[in-house]
Each structure stands twice: as C-alpha cells, then as structure tokens.
Length: 66
Image (cartoon, rainbow, N blue to C red; front, top):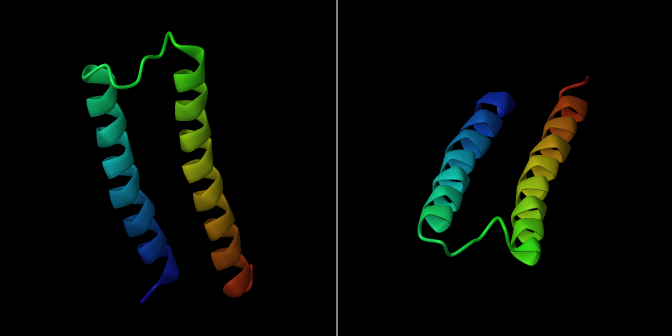
C-alpha cells in the first residue's frame, strides 16, 4: 500500500479526532483560551501533532527516495 495514503489516513482521521476533541473541550469550557497556561498547552499540543506529521512525512519522502 502507498505510504502516502497511510499518512493521509493517519493524520486525516487523527487530525479530525484531535480537532473534534479540542472543539468539545472549548465548548464545555474545559480549556479556556483566555487563561495563559491552558492556551499554551493547546498551542503545544497542536504544534506537537503538526511537527510529528511533518517529521513523518520527511521520513516517508526519504524512504521513497526523495
């Protein structure tokens, strides 16, 4: 199976689940954007998933020869 198809599935479905969880947490006021530590935590989690997806994409590109 194509590695890019798997990458798209992993981060498409995983990203949708992450986004849905963040939206629910924001609507339920479990995470407050106006509270600095919680905003920083949300930014760190978002940056982490984006960074992990980017590194994974680079690994796939290298493994497939560029």
